[in-house]
Length: 118
Length: 109
Image 1 (tube, rainbow over the protein chains, first blue to last red):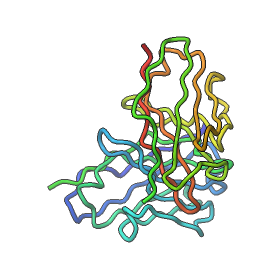
Image 2 (cartoon, each protein chain N blue to C red; image 1 turned 90 degrees about the vertical axis):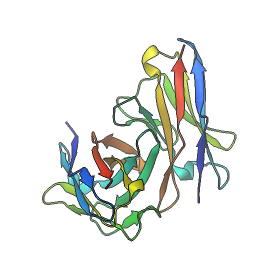
Image 3 (cartoon, each protein chain N blue to C red; image 1 turned 30 degrees about the vertical axis):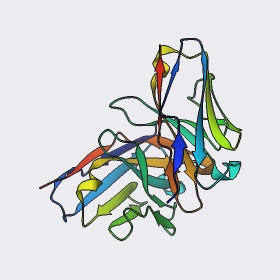
């Protein structure tokens, strides 16, 4: 059974940092591209970042470019999102999502809440 | 900034049919945007329904179908069930970036 479990969320002050993790199981993690998607309270979904299966190709949304860093450790079956210089508008539930065939997002984690507030 | 627009809300009767659309501010949506569709219920993570315009996941009910319609991506629900009441999002690929649609709230009444 495919499982994606996010962790690392919490309350952080503006300007602070946080590192999110996504633990993958039930599939060959190193064969799949992965994404981070977020959802602010009461708002829609927003794509945040993409990483290829090897980690050699990375993309970011303009809203997080220069502040967030996506990475992965295929030996540990884990995906990460390092978030620096956090702002109030970064407050959201952060989901990791697996990308399967033909740019299809198939499996999602349950999400982890990040709250940026003083 | 690219905007992907969906109908804010739609209402459908049980057993009825409803079509949701997904439009791009850059022009017509084609198969090259690899449209995805997701269903999200309150307090839950999104659930994937359709990928690459019209392909279903193994868990996608047969009553859901995807297509291209008049320059937009479309999701059609046929024989709507009460449990289909949810928010629906499309996702388009722009070559190095993805953009989610604004979302459609489907009410089954």
